Image (tube, rainbow, N blue to C red; front, top):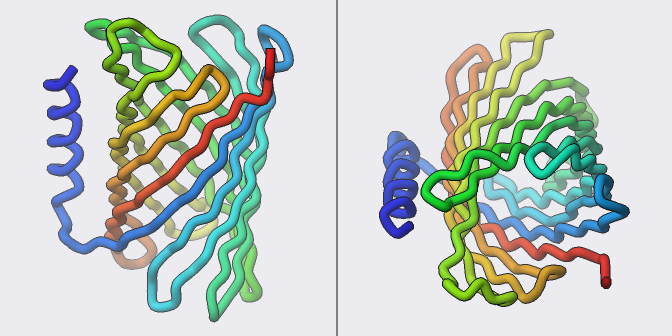
Length: 229
C-alpha cells in the first residue's frame, strides 16, 4: 500500500509540475445523505469556496441528488446544483443538472477502486451574458485504511485521479482539466467521517487563445449519514 501511495503522488506531481504557475484555493464542504431503503438514497452537498484572483471571489453552492442502487457494483445518480460566485465586480450564477453512475470495481491487491462518471449541463448567468457548457467528468479513486483489526473508528487515505472535458457547441470553447487528490480522513462511526484533501488541479482552455491554469486546493469535507438505526 505504501508503494501504491508513493506512485500515485509521484505521477500526480509530475503531471502538475509541467507548469509552475499556480493559485491557492480553500474549499469547505458538508455532505449529507439519508438511506430510504436498500435501493434508494437521497444525498447532497453544500459548501463555500474562496477563489483567488485580481478580485477575491467567494463561491457558495448547494447540490441535492438521488441515488439508485442497482446492485453492489453499480449505483445511478442524478441531481441539480446551484452555484453563486460573488466578488467586488460581478455576481455570477450557475445552474448545473447532472446525471451519472458509480461503479465499485475493480479490486486490485485487496485495494477496492471506485469509478465515477458524470455528465453535467452548466447554465451560466451574469449581468452581461448567459451561456451553456457541457462537461464530462471521470474519476478513479480509492480509500486505503491501515487498521488490521477493522475497527469502527479508523484513519484512511483517500486517493483520486479525475479528468474533465468541457465543451460549448455555440462557440469555439474547449477545456480539458486534470485533478489529483491526496489526503487523510477519519471515520468516527458508520454515520460520520471527516476528510482533508490536498488537490492539484491543472486545466487547459481554448477560447481563441490557449490558457493554462494551475490550482492548489485545500479541501475540508464533513460526511454525515442521517439514518440513526
